Image (cartoon, rainbow, N blue to C red; front, side):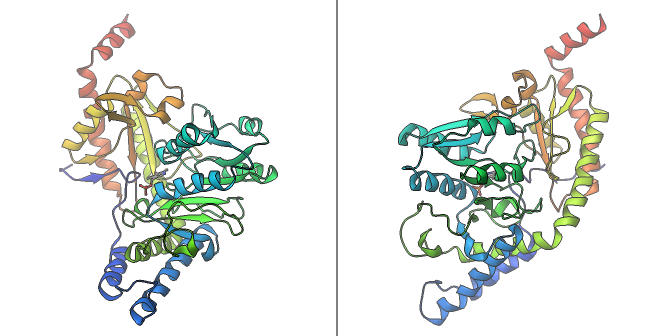
Length: 396
Ligand SMILES: *Cc1c(COP(=O)(O)O)cnc(C)c1O
């Protein structure tokens, strides 16, 4: 196949859809007012913010007055966790989360441990990235005030048993927060049916721009502010509204609601074609994450005997954008906390590749990857002393 650009890093961020861009441009051009202003310019833009709030609420089965706009998923996670911790610190100081959360959750919990006297249990996961429900139950203490478990993992796609976790939280009168940034728009979500008390979502993972997100907070739950200041967002999140961003995330949620089933079905087929093709064409490969309880958008692998970074660079040269769970931080190449939590060896975790799909992904894109990837892996392996040693051992 001819050279093409194939973007398969949608779990890092998606492109923005045209309908969403049009919505934003309309707000920027025609509705410049501050929603807090008394005059017509202010009053004109207010309904747009409320319409967007309704669209977000509808997608997750909430009421619109339970949705608060934030500057993204990280802020929503920080707010849910710190806001709960500070509001309930006289009730208890124990939080339960998992070892494979996004850093927005993990580092927030570590901060609360280090500077505010909280105690945090980080639940293990099995080799598919699934938490153990019995371990969750036995971790609950009289002082537990919050359970924060992600809906679906951003590196390996594993979907947690959210409804069950919600039931356990409710039975024990503990608040339940879920980071649903990767799940929203890809999985049907009903916060009431699933007993979710707080839920984080982000615009730029669902075809809206970066820097806008939302936190759902169930009616009646009182958590502290993260951002203090003006009376915006029912006095709970100060700061002049990001009106264009809010209109955009509303439009994105509207589109997601309309397309959810078709979207999921089509992408699941492409994902499965990709996984099947990779396993057929590339030996010594494992699929990371759960094969069934998996996001439609994520295909994730470990290829033995190669380095994820080298693989990403080679893929980039043929136009393919993916990502690796090995983050090069301060010069040291360390496999991600998620891959290490699966119990993979360093050697295997180093050869990780995540290819994440979107509504823009085509069958030709997948065909192209299935043509290029095996050749690149083979070439990288041919340069690996480990692979040579392995083959010699195998031939003996
Ligand atoms: C991207 C992401 C976040 C952070 O969202 P931002 O809007 O980039 O701050 C949090 N959690 C998960 C699971 C994510 O994938």
